[in-house]
Image 1 (cartoon, one colour):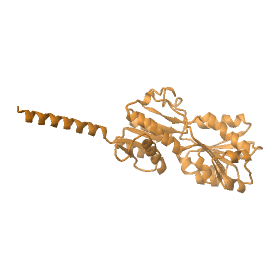
Image 2 (cartoon, rainbow, N blue to C red):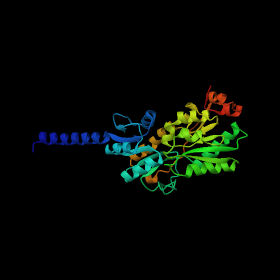
Image 3 (cartoon, rainbow, N blue to C red):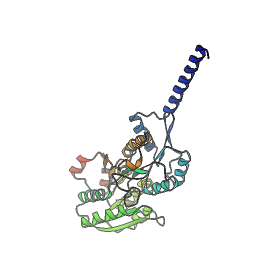
Image 4 (cartoon, rainbow, N blue to C red):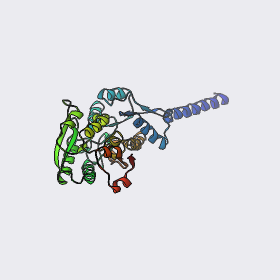
Length: 313
């Protein structure tokens, strides 16, 4: 072989090697996201940008709709993402059944991950699922405490709960209410009656609104129904107060979806969900609606007003 041909051959192999490495390094990774609000998709993308990823160049955030339905999960899975971010225990169980080996990052306000079998322990999940879960017992106590502070004479409360989700959140809230000396009435959202009808027929003199995608989607109607019934209401969704409810106190969903990017980044870099500990939400929002308080003849204590993240006047 001539020397020039040999050198040319070596140069070709080196160039081919560099091209192959570049293609490997720039392979478009896919992150599936299932949620009902457009800004939650962008929160995941923003979180990935902060970690050095470039959506559109080395990363694609996949979505196929805004229903959050189980069929939507199936359509996202058809895109074969490297990892899937989704909220809600029912959706998580469905995704785990459809894709038992895919890394799943949960954003969950409704369930106890150990009790429902999603993880072995919080510190070491042990399977293909990890994520961010709310500590419901602690949260329930805070909701009751805030209601009592606004209405010191409170003697009873109704709890609006979506039957499709696990019982831990409603049971924790009932225990917290009972410990505070409140009689409890459970309003079960199960498809036979609307949330408005349940609230209209409630006998209690306050309302605690628990979480589910369906309840979140109906937050404006629920807030209006509580005001028509002339009872103070509080929800784990901060957006509930923005939609007309009296008080919203809970984790920022936007913050939770942005935080999920840290899990996604770890998985894309080769770590297993089995070894990534479950986290609790770190950012909470406290929103008070003074307009609603005025219509109900209530006044917020100064301590709550000064401690609120947002006061709707």
